[in-house]
Image (cartoon, rainbow, N blue to C red; front, side, top):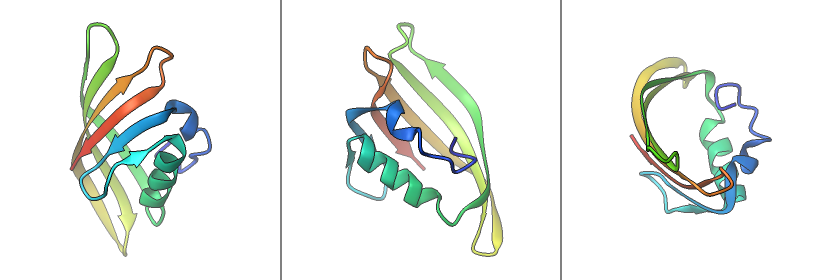
Length: 103
């Protein structure tokens, strides 16, 4: 989904009251604002590649920690294997209720 830039189904992954925290902006509150932020973040990036390097899931399945890299073309050059980390919590319905990204 993120690699293709096809984000129409993204709001359904997040709870309507979800919180998304990332290093450079105030929190994004709610699935529609999260969708708008990620759509903006990915615009202008081509040939996106995302690779998970480590995934740690809680024993009860309510949270996950992911180390990953992103590579893409932008600004006339290739940006390769930029390291990231994401922490996600899920609600009872399986939707994301909390996400924090680090870069």
